[in-house]
Image 1 (spheres, rainbow, N blue to C red):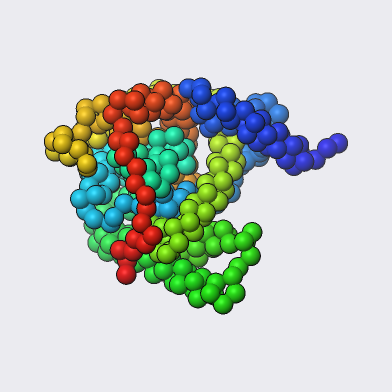
Image 2: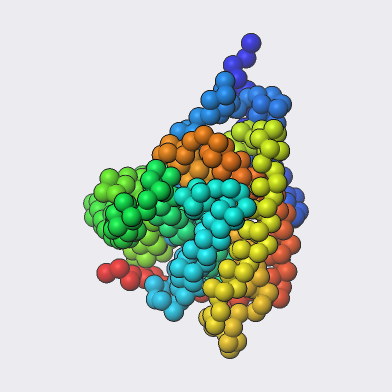
Length: 432
């Protein structure tokens, strides 16, 4: 009998061949690659061929899911940082600040209220649900993100920078929910949460992202002058930057996701030769696409019909409120008075604001936070409830946003997009 592992390799290889050769046709359809991966993952799961078994004998391997999604997220947030060439000035990043400082807490609090009032959760459980579902996804949102380093469109910039940052900055709220699960007397741990999980971890993440990335670029430049690296190996410097930045930041209790995003920004601005970060971006995007395939296949394979139906009404409530009310209304509030860059308009087009509200794509980041919560105190019936609401919400996002992304972005490009392109300067170094 043929080993299941060998069959898995065959199926994944066949899938990659089909989507690659058919990508020209697929790109023209109102259909994302993630939907195809999800469907194949379902067929590879327990209801069809049973080739992928993250669940075995009623035991769910949450640790494996956490490690895989962790790797996918750090690759993706670094890619987001590399794509962005805008000057690091508050006025330029105003839309990002609004989406992170206002929209993300609004989303978390609103989802927590839904969890408390309608889903029978405690405040700790409800806040944890909100924190898990609040981050937008930098992995599955490629169609609505910056297309290249010269793209200056503010909708794409806002969605790219939001996806890169809120996957990191949801962590304090995840910790808040986990603390509340263990001790419902918030006074016992609130000061420590503010000092360590909020202030220290964010500050260290930013500092480590700058210092480690600058150090690696400096070392590379010194060595390359004496003996250039092999051209085939040179792009692996990007992977090493990601792994070293993430691991060192986590060692000092900082947010590794945040550090890696900052590292991407630093690397983009630290080379005198602009072709270097561009080559790294092309390589990282290829790795990201490959990891996306594996992650969505895993998501499809862990779906089970019975628990999905058990929590269907709760999931549907969360999906409707999150996609149609909480996110759009939160964006509308967050962008009040926001004036678009390079435009005589005093505010965004209403259509642009609604697109910001619609494209709150949920995906791998939420999967990671869920798996992390499993290993850090989320157990029992509450774990099942939050898990299946999260899975169903991600699946709904993959399908709904996957179908709508292509036609909506084409409509946006025709009518509202900022088509101005810029050529990145030889050196943009705000970190000196």
